[in-house]
Amino acid sequence: MSATGDRCAGLHEAGFTLIEMLVTVGIMALGAGLAFPMLQQRLARQGLDEATHDMALALARARAQALASGAPVRLERTAVAMPSGVTLTWPHPEPVLYPDGSASQGAITLSAGTTVRSLPVGGQP
Image 1 (cartoon, rainbow, N blue to C red):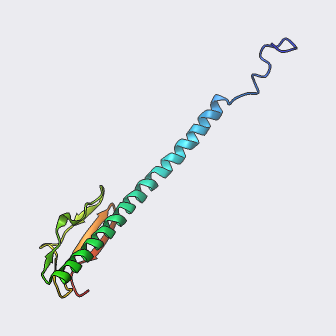
Image 2: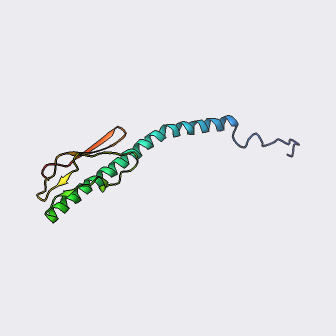
Image 3: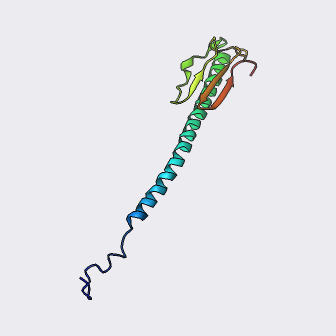
């Protein structure tokens, strides 16, 4: 109770109204709805970048192994684990890397959504 006898004094000044809270929650939901698809696209692209980098390293490793051993090396499909959302298209027959630095013709294709990356296997280094 206040000095004037008003029991509700000061109650109208504190806190937020229901309308203010609903508007705030609505704006936050709209922002999250716009940001979530962009985040998903970015994560898929990052997974594709990592998979492409790992596959390029596997090709380089196989080429180095062929050069060091003096024997052809067949690159196996299981050389790199693909993250979820990344699709791998493998040339047929499997890529073979030769001791002279060349390789069988073909390309390894990695894709995530609408983004596609291609790694040529064949030709001279």
